[in-house]
Amino acid sequence: MDYRRLGASGLKVPALSFGAGTFGGSGPLFGAWGNSDAQEARRLVDICLEAGVNLFDTADVYSNGASEEVLGAAIKGRRDAVLISTKTSLPMGDGPDDYGSSRSRLIKAVEDGLRRLDYIDLLQLHAFDAGTPIEEVLSTLDDLVRAGKLRYVGVSNFSGWQVMKSLGLAEQHGYARYAAHQVYYSLLGRDYEWELMPLGLDQGVGALVWSPLGWGRLTGKIRRGQPLPERSRLHDTASFGPPVEDEHLYKVVDALEAVAAETGRTVPQIAINWLLQRPTVSSVIIGARNEEQLRQNLGAVGWALTPEQIKQLDTASEVTAPYPYFPYRRQEGFARLNPPAV
Image (cartoon, rainbow, N blue to C red):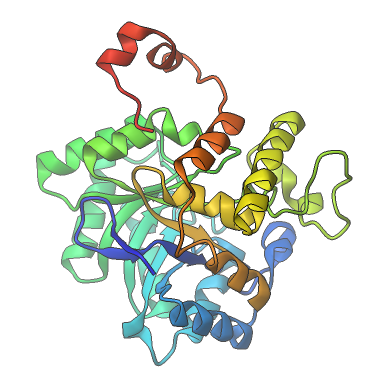
C-alpha cells in the first residue's frame, strides 16, 4: 500500500481508506448501502489491515451513531493499528444543539465519538455552519486538539471561500489548521478540479475522496442500452446523490470499459486508479458491503494507468466548467497566467 501525507500535515494515510457507512446501516439511505454487524465489520477490518489500509472513515450521522459504534467494536483490541476519521455537524435530531458546529455541539459530538471510538485521529466538519461564527468553530476545534481529544481537523463539502476564510483565520489566531477536505470527486463529477483542487495545492489541504464510483454508477453493472439492474441500490438511493445525465454516464462508462479491456482490470478499479493519479488526492475512500466487493476495490492499487489511458478517460469525462473558470481553459492569455492543476 502506498502511503501519502495528508495535505501539508505530518499525518501519513494510505492511498485507499475504508468508508464505514455500511456498518450498522439503517434507514432508506444507509440501509441500502449495507448493514454489517460487528462480526462482519471485524472481518472487513481484518482484510483492510492485511492490505495496509489502516484509515477508517465514519460519521456520527451514519445510521444515527450506529456506524461509529460498530466500527469501535470491530477495532477493539487493536486501536493502535488504525487511524479513525469521523465527521459531525449534520443533524442528529430536532433539538437546537443537535446540528451545526457551535461550541456546545462540537464538544458533545466529540465526547460521543470518543465514547464509541476511543479516540479520534481526524475530525471533519460534515458541512459548513453559516449560523456559527467561524472563529467560534476554529477556537473550539483548537481547544479539542490541544486537549488531546483530536489529532487533526478538516472539513467536508465546503466551498472554496469557506475553506479559504477558515484557513486565513486559523493562521491569524494560531488555531489548528484544516489538513483535509473530504470531497465528492469521480470521473462522473469533476467539479472539484475547478476551484477546490487549486486551493488544495496552494494551501496544502489534502483531498479524501468520497463516492469515487459516482454514487454507485461506475460499478461495471450499468451499461449503455441496458436497464438498471434490479438489485442496484440506485433504485433507492439515486435521489440522495449527485445527479448525472444519462449520456454523460454512458460516455464515461464506454471509455472505462475500453480501458478495462486493455488492462484486464475491472471498471471500478480503473475509476479508482484514475483518481489516485490526480493532484491533492491523499486517499480514496472505498466502501464494501461484503468481502468480495472489498477485495475487488483493493485491486485498484499496485499498478498505474498509462498517460494515454488517462487522457482517454479525461476526454470522455470532461465537461465545460462554469464561469468564471471556463476562460482559464479556453483562452490562451488566461491559460498562460493560470496553468491548469491537471
